[in-house]
Length: 400
Image (tube, rainbow, N blue to C red; front, side, top):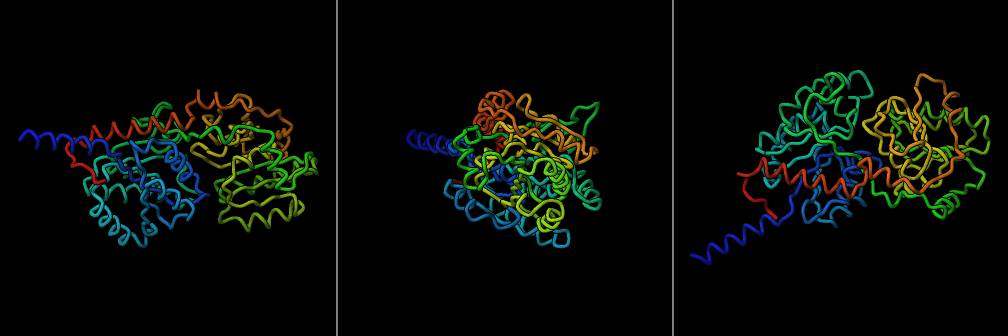
């Protein structure tokens, strides 16, 4: 009898020692996805003896990302594309998925407009912890999308029982505000960074510029973002054209791709000489490319909290940001300047000051503001464990 009890006790200890597997629901796992970039940074930094991320994506993941995640022990599942016209097959997939994977006690969703579906089905399947995470401050680029999404957002309280946001502005947008404060309790999960790779190093700058064929006198105006209406690159090209008119040694470095790529190329040909814009596409060496820049410009129509603006400041770059971006994106004193989108491209261009003395001493500001990924990943692990303890006491032990 006593040996049997001891064996049971040891087995329970082993079950508790297993890491919690968290299902992260994302749109896609590709290098051009800002949301995926945030989640992957937390994946890289989190203690995998405590927490392991598995992923439910809505399209086939990038092969390099898939291999990297699977090497770390993560599982990747691919859901059918979510379209209202194909909603029934999507819901059938979710019902079958949750039935086949009862091990997930926590589902962390990063697609608020689809949350009524994947979190709703999670609730029906008995998943105890259902997290909705807001990464933005607007519900879409077009009026029909905004109307559709605003209706779907109203259903979120019926399916999610934990709220997260990347910024207070994003929380106010999705969870509502009263007297300027967020109405409902939420957890702030910052878009934190691994600070080491972004630290400014003159030798990295020199090497990166050399590989791109940029001379020492070249003024590099940089931008990172998916080529879509939200990022407002059409306005950015006009800003650069006004700047180029007075600085013929300037180039615009565009990192990213998207549905507006060809449209933007045509616009660029009408505004500046062909070689004045560097179309670098989606890259996996962003920290080095930031070192090659002289100034960073982000004229977004809306953002939750732009990761690119944080990366630029971590690299010591002066940043010119749209006034539509939350002030929470200002991390390093003196680097971020805000300007209204109502101002003309020439007025924006006049504020570009690329000859800035670069500093490598940005990490302390990020750490003080809560944007050091090592610290924030530990906090997120603790949050998951606390939620599991609070909501899952009666749940059977998870499978390894």
